[in-house]
Length: 275
Ligand SMILES: [Zn+2]
Image (cartoon, rainbow, N blue to C red; front, side, top):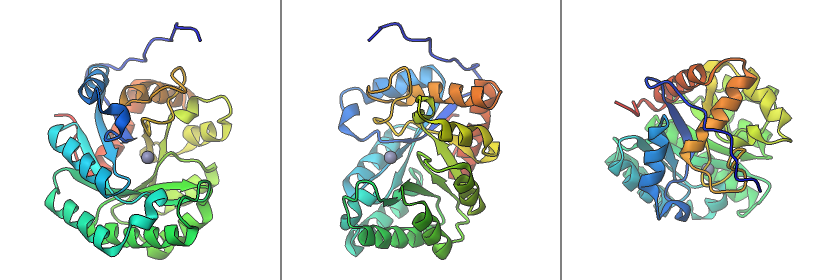
């Protein structure tokens, strides 16, 4: 591999980006989380939403948010962990939200994963449904993980909705028609670094055409690093590469794209990430 990387895309001082989906509690960041957040902030990625996947990681996410004003947390049971979403564990998570209203801005990630099926699809659907109901009662946005389960996801969302708190189709993987249907249900479309990959034409089409007021950017770190760091640990800093590529697709500049997606993110989560 060549060590020559293209320069980091840069932002004007007054404009910043938010990484709408990262897993800062994961082991990959244990050694250098402060440095990861500092270098992101220095280059204009001044907000991160860190996402829980089960009880432990949700608690860890809340602790990170407590220590960093630029980080907010979400809590929930990932479809891979749907078996753990029993009534007692869910009650515990609800209490976490109520006790940490300042830190917790959403519920997720929740949803359906028909690729890996670590949990039985029926168990996934039950956990998904229950958590949609909880988020609705709490009035907070939901963060959806959907892998090859588009129709079931939207069917359950429309049966349990409407979601006035809104939501995010994270690491969006459908076509433009599916994006439009999700938007009709008050969802945002969050685009990951995959948009920089060679074989991602469908995602590029979505990223180019989604209405700007529904668009977000994310890393899904530590996974899915954009080019030129594909295959290495992802981190909020690299949101810059993803945003630059999307800006190019939309024939605008990264400053404009950052300003708009940041506005979307702050409105959705009702939080100012950088003051
Ligand atoms: Zn995730």
